[in-house]
Image (cartoon, rainbow, N blue to C red; front, side, top):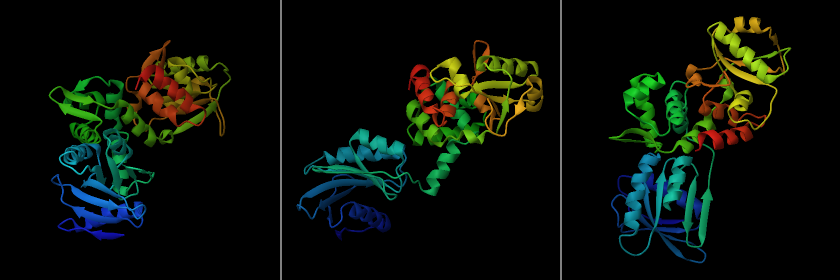
Length: 351
């Protein structure tokens, strides 16, 4: 690859981006031209075969979150149309997550990052490369966003997707500190999941947020104990567990297929899964449940955070977790969980 670029203060950044372009187009020649947009690089990319030159207008953002990508997209699309020759807009960043990639595609803008993700739709050339890897910093930011305490804010927003919130009301509803709510909302705004305007904080992409959370969610974070019971009917077992929990002032809510059977039935299962907050051992004795090392039909989960019981719904007198939590628990569950989750999403969530 032959490179002729005037280097200023961003020597390392430009070299890394050009190197990434060179890896995408082996043997290509890159040449910088005068740029029609401030903060963007105009690059002529000449392919060895058939010797055709493509003109790019490229902007680099130090953070590849959708909020900053949107700024770059505005600059690029205006600059690309400002005067001939026609240039293909491309945004580059150290890392561009799936939600940022989706934003670029929808805007008709190419992208590439230094991790290996790239999408370039040039005349006669299409490059579409994706990697599942995330840099450590991006993984850490995502873990903080979906951590048990922080995720209380996500659950509130997804359960009331059309509501407008002040920061104080959102923190109170999610039972988190004002600082936690502030940090979560800022992170969501960077990803373009929420907007902050005079009308309040509003969720703008509920489906994308749910998908992001579901991709990181792990049901195993909630310790589970499994049991055998002499009762055979799952609905009767569920009702007996709910009645016993109320009698001893424990909080309980069904989840997985036993919860979905009451909310949006689709997949049948003989098992009963329930979150329990309270005296679990007393409940087990009351119901005469027998421990099961393997198998079992009654599974009691101790929630890693009591936020899982937010907006518990009552169906036929039996408590069930909210639809957001039910979807999260189901979507990666191996026993036909995805099928039931999709049906629940279609019938109850609507996004």
